[in-house]
Length: 295
Image (cartoon, rainbow, N blue to C red; front, side):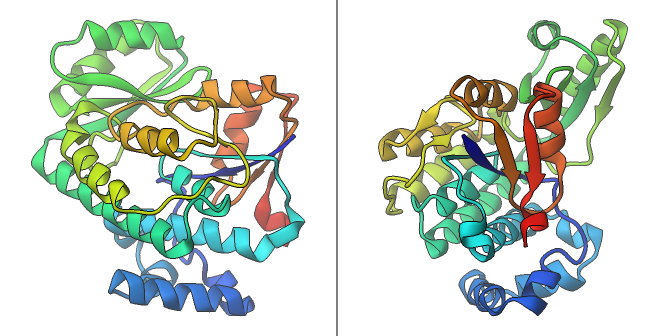
C-alpha cells in the first residue's frame, strides 16, 4: 500500500510554491483563485515574503495547504496512493486530495481554522516545547504532575514528542523533563499552545465552520490524527477534525497502524521533507519519497 502524507505548520519556507507557479499553468490558476478567495495576495507573501511573514498562522496554514494541494494536482497519476494522512493542518490537504473537500471549501476551512487559532493565541498565554530522548509515557507522567495546563501535543516519532500549554507550565515541565533525562526540552518559536485545551475557542469556531461545509466520502481512506485509524465516514471525519484542535496529533500511532494495514511506501506531498524523516524513525524499513521528486 502506498500512502500520500501531507505536512503541517512548520514546513513553510521563503519562496515556497514559486517554482510551481512559474512552470505549471494549473498552479498559476490555483494561486490566482486563492488570492481572490482569501482576499489578499497570498502568492506574493509565499514567493517574496520574509520568514517572519510566513510564520503568521493566518498565512502559514493556507500557504502550506496551497503548496500541498497544488503539487498533488500537478502530480496527477504519477502518484496513485491507496490511503492518505496529514500531520495536523495537513489533514485538510489529505481530505482535499481525496475528494472529501473541493478546493474552495478546503481553502476556506483552512483559512477559518488559521484565523480562529490566531485569535485563540492572542487570548491565551501559551507555547509549545520539543522533548527529545524520553519515552512517551514518561513525558505524559511529567505533564500530569506539573501544575498548570501542559499536555502532550504531537507524538512525532519515538523519542520525539511536543508538549503544549501555558507558558509557565511549559517552563516547569521542561525543567522536570531535563532532570528526568531528556536529551533536549526546548521551547519552540510558535504563536500559541496548539493541540491543547487553550485552543478551545478555536475548536468551537472551527466546529461552526465545518457544520456549514459540504463533505463528500473520500475516494481513499484517511488516517486521522485523533483516531489513528483509516476513516471514510464523513460524520466521523468531521468529528475528528474538530477534536484535533484540542487533542494530540498521534502521528507515531497513525504510521504504525498504516504499516500494520500493509503500507509499504509513503509519498510526502508538500513543502519540506520532515514527514519522510519521521516515518523512517518510526520504521527504518519503510520506503519514503518526496512528491517533488516525481515531477
